[in-house]
Image (spheres, one colour):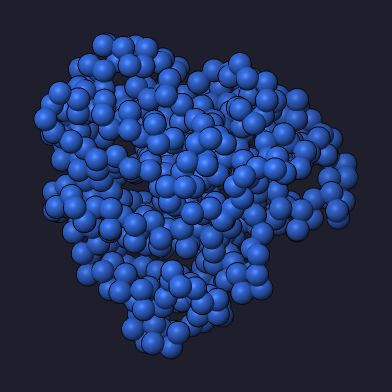
Length: 446
């Protein structure tokens, strides 16, 4: 640990870093997003979901191939689809219960809160089953991919069949290729788990892209579903080309945790090498990483010096009566009966905000989580969570935001619709997703 602190040039400290309470488009330094009710203006667009031509039809194939041509011209050398376990504590209610909730009477006098928390808890919301074959942490390997595809199919999951279809459709008959891959993150949905996931993802990207002959003129595209977007937000802060006093501190906290909990698949030396690559700006041979998030709750701030293009898709249905269509609705007790019908769109994106999380599984992870919380999250505690949800913020502080009315899914089971959170990863939405990404990031699609 001492060698890492010396090598990075950042001494360990016990003080809490000062939080800045406004959007930071550059040098974000791991600051949390703000929750603003102001109109995002030009940063937000509105869409109604249109599936377009039927998947695998000639018209669909032609449209996807046209998108692929524009991506090739824009020097996109690879696309990675990123998701976690869709049948986990999606709302992060374990942390809410730890810091209060019904156990300490915070719901007293707040009508409808008991019903809302019942819809958030894994044991009572109908999403998780005790006999599910996979439980976090999950690995990013072929056997896990296969199990996840059987378990979830296309419910919050980029299946292997989906990824193969996407890759084939982009370049069919062109003689060119844009390799597409999938990455399943551990789904340890707390600060230390997401920091580890960001590091492991970066190491994976280094290896995955090694055969792509990347240059500084090339681009990689990463599409992350749900909480995977938090991993990407952290990655943007890690990769920033600007100054970052927090980056060294984050690496030190993680190194201390890894030293306390040794494992064959991680080492402090590995962190030191990766940190040098980052500081030398030689990660991924200097290529640009473009990012798309799908239904990611507003939490960690983004550093736009660490990524290229940035676009957020949110399943959003306008049900407010005040004309502020860029905001979600958070009114108790109504929200409790709206959620099962997906009346307002994606309720995971709306409710899994600051203050929510899973709980670390060891004393060492708990301590690392506390250390990270001091840097990342000024909003903590049950009442602060309720305050954040009532801000009803849909759009992240940075990047473009697409508020899309995907419509109500016919499935009645929360395990199928995930309270409006499962619509993004389905094959019927593939052409829509690809078209919007190409129009926002790359050459216009005719």
